[in-house]
Structure formats: C-alpha cells, structure tokens
View 1 (cartoon, one colour):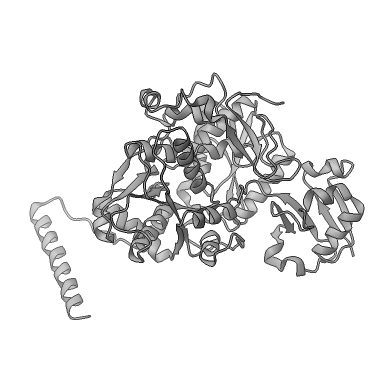
View 2 (view 1 turned 45 degrees about the horizontal axis):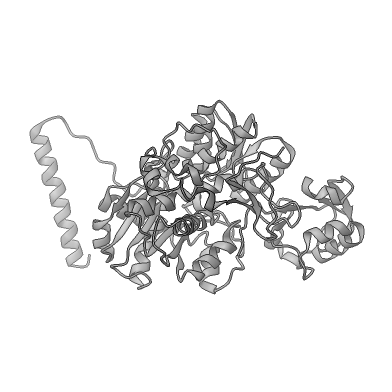
Length: 93
Length: 427
C-alpha cells in the first residue's frame, strides 16, 4: 500500500526540494513517524515541543479535512493523496 | 524582496521573529501566522485626534496606523460608515444604548470587506503583483473585483459554487475572472493556499493576509471616534474566520496605548449561525479547541467551518468576559426584517445573525439595557435577497384609477382585521 504525500513549497527546504513523496504509512501517526525517519528536519518544523503536530497545519486526504474522516484513527487507503497545508491565519491565543 | 518601512513590519505571532515587509502569511520557521507590528511610539505625535479629524472622511484618516506603503496616495473613499443610535430596535429588544455600525453602506461594494481589500491591494501594488485573487464567500469577491478593476490589476476569484446569485454577478460585472468551486469555503480556501504556492499572484487573504486583516481595525477606530473618542461597553461582531473581532480589539488597544481614549474593559460578543458555529460552540464549551463543522446555513458569508482565527477569537471573547451565540436560519431572517423595519437598514444574512444574536444577548441578560453596545452590521441585504424569497406576498397590480385604489385599500384593511380577529380567536 502506498499513499502520496504533498507538501507546500515552504517545507521543501527540509526535503531536498521535493514537494511530494510516497509513504507506506497506514494512518496519520504512522505518517508522522515516517517523516521522523525520512525528513527529520521537516519533522522538527511540523511538530511542537510536545511532539504533536502543530495546530497551524491542516491535513487533507483527497480534498477532505482529515478531522472529518476520523483524524488520527483514519486508515489511509491505497492511492490516497495526503496534503499538509499550513493554516493561513490563526493568531496568538 | 523585502520592502522596509520604519513604522511597521511583519512579526511572527508565536516566536516573535520579524520579517520586514513581504507577501508572506506564515512564519517560515514555526509556521505560526504573521501579523503587522507597529512602532506605536513612532506615530504617537502623528496619530492624534486632531490629525485624524483633519483627514478625509474615510479609513485613510487612520493611515498612520495602517500598513500602507510610504508615498501611497489613496483616492478611494472607503469606510467611515455611520454609527447610528438604534433607538427603535432598542425599544423592541429592551436596549436603551444600542448602536449599529452600518457597513451595509461601505464604499464601494457595500460590505466591510472594502476596508480590508483597499489595504491589501495597496500592498499588492507595492509588491508588483499583476494578478490578485482571493477565496471568498461573496463580499470579499465583490470588493476585490471592484477595486482591482479600478487599479487596473487582473483579478481571479474563487468562490463556492452555491453562492448567492447577486454576489456572483457583483463579481463578474467588474470584469474579474470568477472560478466557481464545487465545494464549501473551506475547500476553496485550501485550493487558494495551493494556488498561491504555485502561482506568483497576490491572494489578498492568503499571502497578503497580514496586511489585509489590518484594514478591519478601522471599524474599531471609527466606533471610538464616532462615540466621541470613547470605547463602548460591549461590541457584538459576526464571525466567519474570526479575524474582525480580534482586529476591533487591536484597534481599541492601540487607541488606549496612544491616549486617544480612556482605558476601558470592553466585552466582546461573537455572533454565528447555528448551521456554522464552530467558534460559538467552542466559547460555550469553554475551550479554544475549535472543531471544524460542515456549514449548512443561509448565512453563507459566515459559512466558514474551519475558521483560521477561531481559537484566538474564542479565547479573546472569553477573556473579555463576553460570550458567543448562534441563531437558526429562521431567526436570521427575522433579524434582517427587524433591523430593516426598525432602523431602515437592509442587511444581508450575516447582519441578521448579528441582530438576532444581539436580541438574545439582551434577553438572556448577558448585556444590560443601559450599557453602550455596538452591533456590527457588515454587509448589505441587496446581496442576499434569495433568503427572503417567499417571505413577502407578490402584490397584484391595480388599474390607475382612484376608485380602484380605494377598493384596494379597503380590501387590505379588511384582510388585516381578519388577521387580527384570527389572532384573538386563536385561529
């Protein structure tokens, strides 16, 4: 099983310029672990001090926000396109 | 390229790093959003009541605290809309000190979005963008299209496919390229992020967002100035992405810091439609964890299920001692009618949300009758007439004869008496 992961340009300085890569992760935690291994610098950028995905990043699976699909419990399907997109606002809490 | 300016520059909201001035919305390091930070002390002697009063009757009277490039010569009289004492509406809902900030008449396209777009496009020109764009629920589309036309900049605008017909037409008439997306605003917004990443276009609410959002501050400046340089006790603000309510507070804070108004604790109240109420839901649950929703409401201009500024707006509202409410589509239409019938202001569905929520806040005692309260009306009803279809009878035509007119009046009065009798007898 393979999914396609698509990244914004801002992230490519940590991926040797690659805007997309394939992963065999089965779910979001698996994908984050994969990024940990493959692109450690990117991993540092997208996770906070507690190791959680920063709240400024939205994850979409085939155009849908992953939170509507069950979030971390969503099981990726073969051929899924997973996009990481920084939120364009958010402000300080 | 970095465009320096001594008065202001982009600053990361989280890590505090500064980035000068460039079309950038998120911190390259921690990905947090960027905001425009000012050297307030540098404008202390310039941003004065006297200088403001001597300025034009538009948002440009506050230019010293707007992120517009040096040498920019604004010629579009945007903003400075009426703040009216809503005595009649107040009487109906139990308020004695209720004011309505009426951006249903904002120039040039009849919504508060004209404020943000004029600031954003000043920066689009500075950064040399030949094409500008936006993701929009309608009002922003109208404003970008109109102001881009005037500036001779190409516009490409993306909207949800099911937008109100008037908002579609009000974008197309200015010659903008309109792309209807088969999805809701959140889908459109996500696509625009990707386009902005791929094309060298200026997206007013994506890569120009920090500048764009600052235009909203002028609502706050105007409220204070029109109240005689005083702050209100409460402000009721419709919430889509949650940016406007935060920027009104920023305006009040700047005015306090610069000594233009006395320090005062203002409570902020957010208004949403029940069919899309992620921020109000979070406020009611006492959390900043704003969960996205699938919008389903007639208030399409507020139909943002994943509000980018939602967590910050929810926290700000609770910290201020305010509250957030949501109202049904039926209440939204009633709110529109009530504001029109009492104050002569025809607002769009979002204004119906604000009006209905304001009424409920008084009814529930969250706002006291004599507190100075400002309800923000952000758009014009002519754009959302679809929501009123079926609410008014189509009157039959009569012949141009005095006798026919008399008959017609008697007929109407008879119908009215019958209706009253029906009410009395419970029919």
